Length: 380
Ligand SMILES: Cc1cc2nc3c(=O)[nH]c(=O)nc-3n(C[C@H](O)[C@H](O)[C@H](O)COP(=O)(O)OP(=O)(O)OC[C@H]3O[C@@H](n4cnc5c(N)ncnc54)[C@H](O)[C@@H]3O)c2cc1C
Image 1 (cartoon, rainbow, N blue to C red):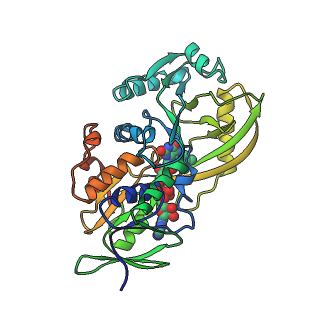
Image 2: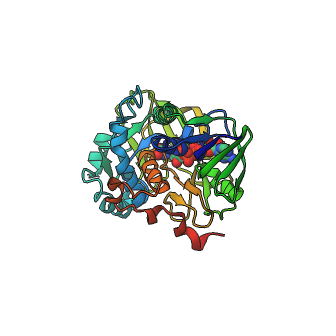
Image 3: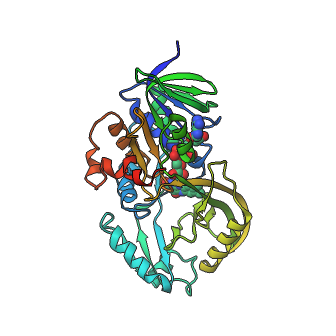
């Protein structure tokens, strides 16, 4: 007799871990992960930024709906704060004025504290920028640094405390549904029976769909690179804001006394263990050097990860309409950490047939916004 649970969740990154945390409150769950370490792929490679003015309208709403979880997590969730305030400045040069205004007009509706800054105000807040580069900017005071490890391990610990089994080194290699409706999930570490299967496999979500006989959602993983660097002249950076170019050509932020930088690249990739390319790091150094008054001295560490999108750049959450008992939690793009509390609650509601939580629905995100069915015309 194989073990049988209500839900098998495939993929123990932030998506699978956060959903297992929510589902385990009322159901039996097994969380299966191919790697030896649950955060090995995208989740362990993020820039750990929380910003409510980033991404499309659905992303911004899901981020706003997640903020209170990070600021006030449930008792015992983590010994460490999940977020630490760090203002964020979107910086613009003179040919980016229209973009700056457009983002302000849209984002201020959800984030009323958002402020438009002139060049002098930007330089006062971000004195490392070059005066001849800056034309203006946006100031988001309520942005923060996230402790991704604390968030991810908090979700895993909470799920385990409610009897969820987390199985590492368990690659899902087969998915079969019996006439009775139960799934058999075949993994490299043995088989498990389940009432429903959750596809939280990150960049591999369309491959998992193939195993289940479901049509792909057209997921496009895109590689993004990041690096930690030292610079001259040395100066304390702890109080510096996160600085993002308004057209997202680069960003940098303090990271334990040094700076984390990125060219904000989006290079299409097959699902894989993404690695950084020298050229992308060189591009980032060039762009950051044009905007900032310091000189990059050394690249101390570099990495890359995949941000996976569908055509409308909104996450895909809901049951497949053709393959019964197959639930999608995919396409979190570059926002999967900051939206994880709200997305997990939305997913847990939709998977159990409950209505969308009020704090998410009231921000305009309904089940149709997230459903895989919206992508049907574009599906192969
Ligand atoms: C450089 C960079 C910066 C980023 N910055 C931010 C940021 O500042 N803020 C933010 O919110 N987001 C950011 N992101 C995005 C964020 O990291 C992702 O949206 C998020 O981690 C996606 O989580 P996931 O659980 O869907 O994917 P993953 O973490 O990749 O997890 C999917 C898991 O599924 C497993 N899996 C796949 N196939 C199988 C199988 N057959 N069997 C078993 N397991 C399987 C994989 O091994 C993997 O562990 C950034 C991403 C990158 C790359």
